[in-house]
Length: 602
Image 1 (cartoon, rainbow, N blue to C red):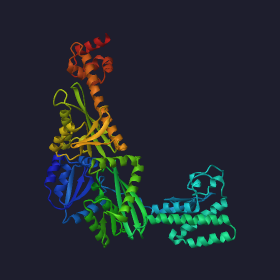
Image 2: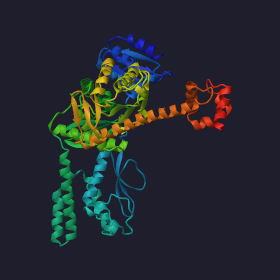
Image 3: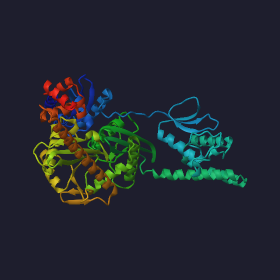
Image 4: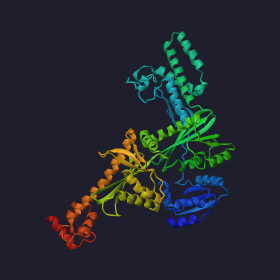
């Protein structure tokens, strides 16, 4: 089916709850969704000018047909949607891979034994486990290393070497510098293993260690007493650290997310028996807003699970949260609440979860938190509703009213996104008029957006910046109103020395020099859009000069000169072209080709 046929079919859907099933040309189910009113939801996919994410645009472009199933309620549609997603595993739905396998603590068979966290059993050591939580395993290994001053490196300890930082800060006995014998070292390993097998820190009595320390001191075995003292201190420090993540509720799951460069990272903190029990994180591609995925994410996360707490915390409210809570309550036969905490301990836990999401996403995308935070600062400075992840900037360039052009650049997450750069020739008038030029360019850009046919203009930015002040803003505001575009619009103002000075608004200028990071970002955007626009103007001017040279050839006018340049790309290639190649250009006759060859030979 064509897009218009799909739209027509969607317009005939009933205004009832149900599930819709998108299929490609081969009949494969590629997306399953639910709706409170089928007609309203499905027509949004096929209407012109809808602000879809790139992922949804791609999905819609693959849809050849769709089916639907009417349900008695939105809740019934949710249950059916979940069942169909499990059955078909559609490629455009959020499909969370459950990588929760078995985790083990391994004690190697080496001469100098080591304690490690692993996911697979083998024949090269002793194993403790299995555990269901990789977080618990890695945390336990980290704790015993600190308590018993065991190395975390993979060095060989048979030959003395220079110790690492862990030794200098008191976290390792440094077998690498022969500070401890093999026997004493492996005795520490055995004590650590015994410590692990007895249970968590709370179950291990510090009183026992204190008594052993006192006995060692009375026996004048001060070295052993010192080691026991250090173990007691390490245990106390770890206990204090654990208290930081204790909560007032026996069990709850906490979800927080961050979006960067179209990728969302959802961090999950699972609390059981008043303590942090497990940590997880998931990545979701091609998203712009948390509203785009939270309901579907939670639905997939809890599908088939039985260990569901009575409290679920999220960092933001989202559509469908009450429906999710009802579904989970009926599934588990107990009251489950989805809560967005606003203050106190629970708000602090949400912030900790958000920090985990930021860290995990930074590691995945290899982007720094500095780049993320400068956009937050810009959001606060301009009083925006959301972080401006996608910024479009525009500049006009001309030479005395000739070759009037414009450049559009995109900054994604504080970095140039050159795949989104666009160039415009001003077509509506002749002469120099920056205001009319800016109006024409933005009109053409958002006209393409409303048509919904060009994927290069399919997504709205979070912020528009114009090179200029109130005049440029005033010229563009009517365009935004014309197309119903609700995107913040500001200007970038330069001083008398053509350096960035402020951000212009309809009510005045916002000075930004005091905020160094925002100032640097805006300066980079303004310099880049100016460079891009003027480079296009110079390119056209250069081609025009070349075209003028070609018009010196008998029989070659402006039209044929432009055709030659467009075909060959450069004057050098025209000079080197053979007669047949010249004649392959539309409008170039045999006589024209002979004249061109004769001209350049002279």
